[in-house]
Image (cartoon, rainbow, N blue to C red; front, side):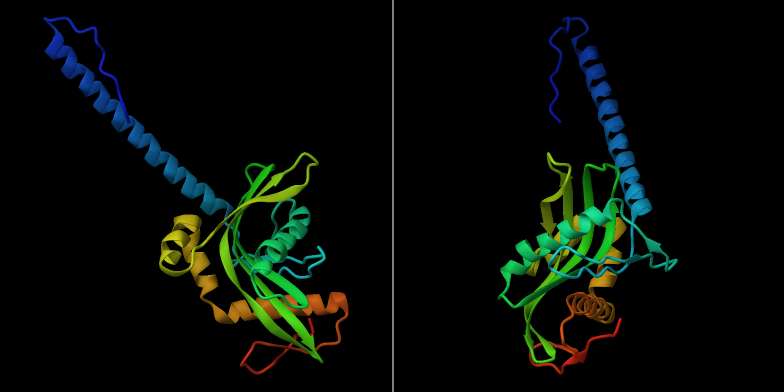
Length: 240
């Protein structure tokens, strides 16, 4: 912090005024530091208070996504405000901006685990999650995975001039050496552990993925019963 020393010192009181000025600066800096620490704590408490924990399946590439978020502690369904408006926007962004980065397939099925949200400003919503996209080709009664992967991070949804939500920013976790540092920066202390537990839980991820495929197949009335990753046995698509 840059400060300017006053120039109105008299010869007699120069040293005394100078010491008083630096003492005031010291107190001022101490107060500012204290306020900053309090603001950080308040931010952490606010984030913790609005934390939404659970698994969410986002399905269908035509805007009819189904997202369910279940609180990890109570098993009760929780909701994000305006989620009906956000679902198709989130889905289309995942298909266009994330799915397009991979080898193309006949079918693109995105899904996400929503980890937290800041809804304090209805015109600018922040959503933290583990976002996945998979591209498939239909071969007989099986959806064979062509490509896909995970893109955790934080998305910003803002309303345009028509009052419709659009994704204006996606702060994603880095790959490679910057993975851990960027994940901790994006999710922060209040959400990182939850993100890590979800992202590292292969069983939970596979359940969410299978559910998203089942919803897509049902909605589009596809004559398929299995999905398969390259080099792995086919898995049966759940009935529900």
